[in-house]
Image (cartoon, rainbow over all chains, first blue to last red):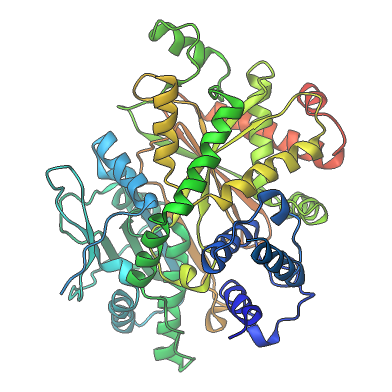
Length: 79
Length: 461
């Protein structure tokens, strides 16, 4: 499974959309129906799964799947 | 072989209250769910028994405390109990409610005993259904709503041939996952740092009371400490009364629209309403803390596994009078978002850290108000029941560990219900009237003029 699909499989635990139907421009709150609590708990799941340290200031700016994936890649490259 | 698990932070919260207040009554949760229809009680009984099999948390029990006072939890494999039926149809609806209120006051006393009772009820005016009485260590209100819906889906499947309800997540599997998360050292260190940093930055919190500054002054005199920043908790007279206020659909729509247009959550708007009132009646105090309950259910598994996942964290904000309403709302949202990120932490450890740092007397607190915003209505969401009138009601357990506990929920007809549970030892209905009145004045002034300062709003309402 690619990292993107692994990422989307986690997203799918929080919404009604299957990983294969997710588009990268989808917004967590408006399109996927995430509440603030969902989003924050999802970020915690990402940290544990991909072993990255998210910056709180930065993650609060993330709106879409694409932005989250980009942030993850950047963090993994830096690590 | 049966597995034994330690308690989660959410369960410990209720467990500690039972220990501190020396009665299980503080941990009771009760609800009645009924339909204005003739029910097949034989079938309903079968469905309730099946629900005990499907929803593992209903079979949860606790061991006797060990030498260190620690208890463990375990799930009993099978429950072979009868489900009684009580006929209250000869009473008026309010008489039946009064009787069920008495049932809600009953306690589950003992170790290694079932902590969940279900009674089928024939109610007045043609309503029929079931009354559930449980211990909060087993379930929270979201979990109960999921259970009621699952149970009625079972009923409509067997009665009308509708689709069999989808499988529920396994309670023990989700519990194991939660405990593993809580034991993740890296995560724990990050969460601890977040809460410690807040104290480093803001220092000791300052108590604020619904009744104004006199309460803290009284505590200062009682403890002979003019600089005390915490006030006493009522430990003996826990009796609680409930006062409900209904906000009509039209103004409710305005609040919802404001939240949507400004990407603000309703919880945060409500927190702003309460904290502004507290600031107003406490001489403009800027540093206010309110305990806010979070229902930690985000994934499908968390939603359908049952269990007690609701936990409270202090929402502390320092908002100066000159800050605009909108900026203050975002300030709260910012704080709350960070709290959500660190909500795996055990809130008892936050209090422990504060006691260690500030040496406050035993049984004192920094908070007088507790908020739960409950977006989920107790409604049987089932197409076969869509046109049938429903009657559902939560019953208070009658013993409050909190001075004032506000539950805000949405009603079937688009309004909002503000349910104030208040300890009668210190508060009267009039205090709740004032709180509701000013909360509404503050909120509606704020959403009408979001660029007005908090100080001006406090002065004008």
